[in-house]
Length: 436
Image 1: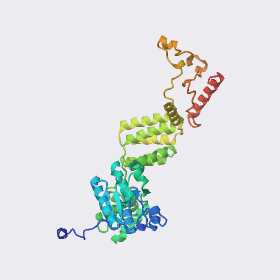
Image 2: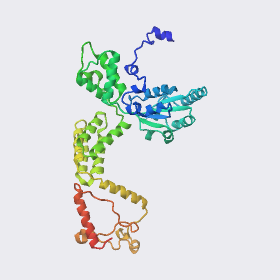
Image 3: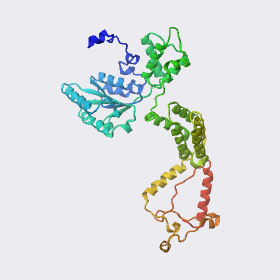
Image 4: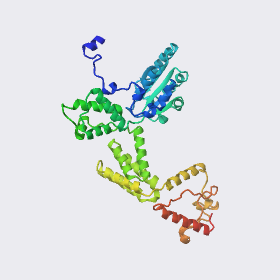
């Protein structure tokens, strides 16, 4: 078979991808993860004792998780075994565990690297527990998903989670410089195009090297690409953003907090970034409406009207024209006075209602459609507010066993100042009339 490959020119001389050729040979060469592999990094300290426990490596693609796993095995003299949760099942796991046990009997320990470990179901994840506990394998799992949500608590309790960060522009710039040294030539890019390439990589070191290869392949002798030409050549790699995964939740969280923090510029940035990544505009519209009721409320009741109008405008105009209406609503809620008083009041009311859900309302506010109910006192003593002075009776409307409660506390911002004045006025009338 080897002869066939050699005859076909597919032997050892087959070019290797640039990312593979630049794969670090030592932990200190891993780019962008100084908090793990730097002089005082977690892994550096761990390896000084040559003692390695099970680990979960959590971070975006292209940040060095697989490379670090290989280097850990080499640094600790462990046999490196790699499987992918995408392509492996129960039978594969059993085989790997049996081989690790046999290897252990011969005095060789195993580092089992499981790529995409979150893809295993709960039962498959549980199968790792015995071999981790008895030392058959040192598990190193890699995941792009939040382990708190995707991995069993029992598995997490036996492994340390290490967070890998997206590579910043300086780290990617160093990778490109190394690539130029290996290739023996500079990237044919203007300064602006080189900066654009750093952004296109979106924190993914492997992607940056793939993009660099595409540039070298496309360039004719003496040709230098500007930003527009670069975009045409590489067809602009889209930012990493999976609407079902962490990127989705991280960005919507950032958008919501920018609005809550009254920063319209940051809000517009995250809004534009999510649209650019293919997020459904109506999902964003729903979240903007949520912001209006959660973080603004009665401080500016018009916010809800504006947000619903923007949603209707988007329905009418469609994309991309209707996106401007959503942006307008976003700026409105970001710059509106803030209050979560209604949000807190509703949460408190739900909590009390759940605890005392069987309490009946006081009889004086219940209707008496039958003689029996009237005889039982239903409706007795009810005072019709419109017939009272100031159209206010001040009666108690809570169950008698519960007593009057206070959930809603308007803030001294926006329209809630006026609401607070009204509530203070009613409280004064209630006290003057001796109502509880």
